[in-house]
Length: 121
View 1 (tube, rainbow, N blue to C red):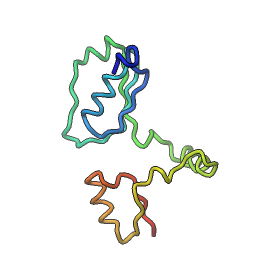
View 2 (tube, rainbow, N blue to C red):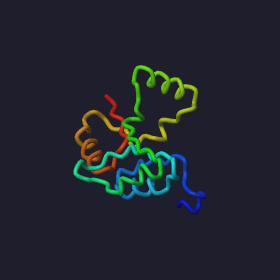
View 3 (tube, rainbow, N blue to C red):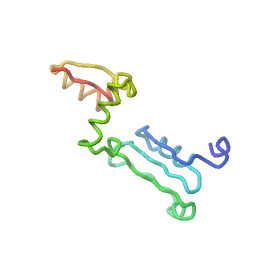
């Protein structure tokens, strides 16, 4: 990957929820770059690499949960972007369910089948 990008990318974002995906993002990041992960893997999973790489290559690793959102500020801004047609949320929805199907929705979430579900009630 670094060969394709002439030394790596400035920022790599991992959304894979897998150790392999994070590893690929980390390896794609250049010296001085930043790897960001939004992945929530199983708590027992760990990622290992020589710690000296962080220092010697001046890299940064960050985690971002829900986009590191500040709800009072960001949700109104997201709504405004949606209303302007600049944030097509409907493309992110895995499926829509009724409230009576909530247990099914949780099962699908556990099995990574329905990551972004909307419950109507």
